[in-house]
Image 1 (tube, rainbow, N blue to C red):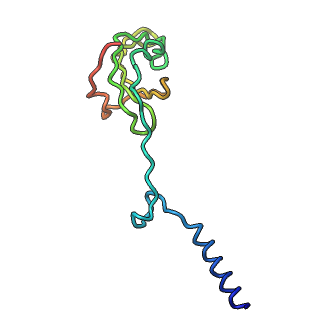
Image 2: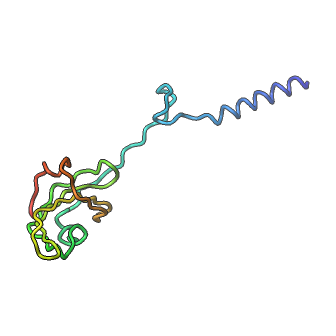
Image 3: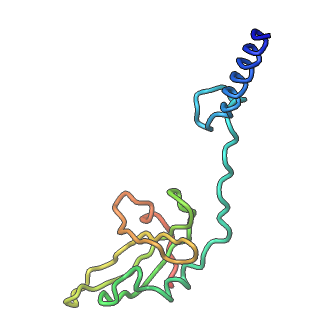
Length: 135
């Protein structure tokens, strides 16, 4: 009788131990049938109207003192580093003393219909090969 109780306890213990084992992570080094399903990528929806955003909040990209003129924008593209969209913005700007600085180009990130971030582009950035339209 005691022997049967010990066997039942061992079987129940093994069952509980194995119950904790689920499917492995998507990137785990196990066979495919043991991996969990990869999450679906988030849907982006419709591209934002970047021209309207810039007309409303141009000061979130260029300082008002820089007096940006000839503002041009590229098509919005899905952001490869996270949710949202990116676009490139060019404008002719002047320094605080009024001296022309030439064309300044920024990459903006758009999240939830707002300009979330801007970064000055480097020479190897893809903004140099974009097509621009006036705002």
